[in-house]
Length: 218
Ligand SMILES: [Zn+2]
Picture 1 (cartoon, rainbow, N blue to C red):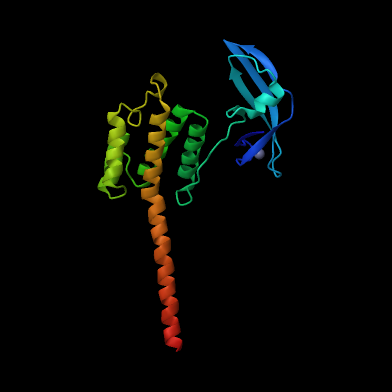
Picture 2: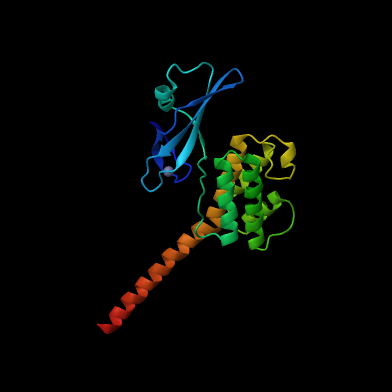
């Protein structure tokens, strides 16, 4: 049985082959494709497994499910949730991760940039290019110095965090990952970290109030 993260339910499951593999002649080899069923009892949906090979399988039915890596449809779409980020910004950030997970790198970068722009705007920072806005966020102590430097480092590497010709430029996966990671860090520092801090403070104050009330009763 092949094992993968099911593109329907998102669990790591075993995929049981349901149909005999079909062999299709392809450039310089063969493509084998078959349907598989997810073993997660709350899912049980079908996915298509595909593999390209230079030579034919001798016994496709037994050999194909033993292949360590098959290409799967539907692909696993991984989103991330950002609980303490304003809803619209969080939705766009989650989509940036979804794009990254299906190798839609330009889409991921375009969304990550939009998220950082919206975060700056949410704090009244609207002037200048994106990197200037990131500098201003640092000046207002919204983000750390190391995060500001990271944004500049990404730009020094010729990256598209700064300007808009996405369609003209190659977008290597590691660059897209670096830009989405920068977006994550900015959201962490601007929204998520302060929200955790505020929640902790609130519960401490409530505890102190309760203790003070007990003190008065006694
Ligand atoms: Zn499943």
